[in-house]
Length: 101
Image (cartoon, rainbow, N blue to C red; front, side, top):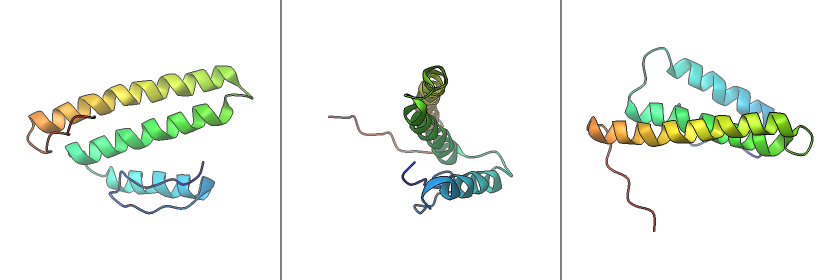
């Protein structure tokens, strides 16, 4: 894992490797002392999607079954991220995303 960024806490910094992962998860825990708003919920879901995808790639050659599980988890979080974007727009708490070219 190159660099883990604490997106759920709304910060754009991070440490490399396991220390970054632990720091990011700690920051998420601190932010979850209340139900997150639409933007922070999207950040939380996206950070879990990214982490799951990285782990799926990391263990692919050594443990294909485990990699497939992490890949399914990443796909689930990708779908949740899309739904969270829709929720943010319909609730009026986020601007609509521009379409991808």
